[in-house]
Image 1 (tube, rainbow, N blue to C red):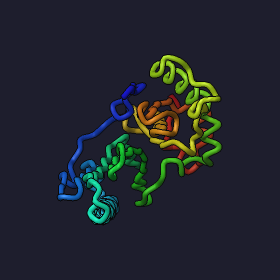
Image 2: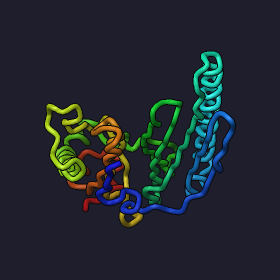
Image 3: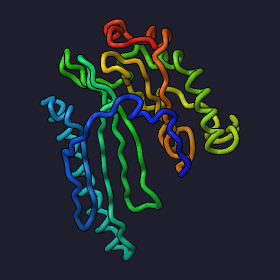
Image 4: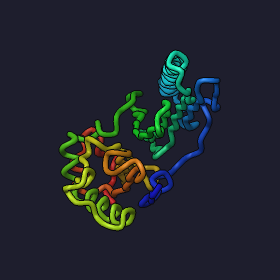
Length: 238
């Protein structure tokens, strides 16, 4: 798989130590793993939500794998063991916010598994979860602020990975918009958000073989203007 991370999102944004909330589990039908960092485990309501998410994912994986085994037994076709994993990591930990990323993988008997990403903000001031995109006035406002640097980076990265730039005639030739991307908020100093991570998962900006496209962009005046007034104090222009 051809893959290069521009600035290594987790390293650039400040990875903290990890604690396993769910050691890998295996059965005859599936493998399962779910992890989140100690910083999340220390916030009781967030930990409760993560544990519930873990339980839901494991129950669904077990049920789907069992159904697939029954189907293959009935049809006389080979059974392929299911797999599901989810790992949360710290992107930034400021006085007000804990910013997390998540990567997940699932295999359900096909030619290959599927992967994906996501983000989460825990607002300590009000004690609730937020989608990182929710701190912006609108997706359109964030789109306007990051389109040029994001699309310019993606074009360069495509040339680096593929040897030539995609064209708008290619199936993945266009630059995907923010609504199709994972947005992460990062900090270089642990005090304010001054970086934005944008991730295009597989099949969003490229083929499965190309992997994810991950860019780290600075918080600019344009980005700051796109932030809702209630959250602007948590950001800093670089």
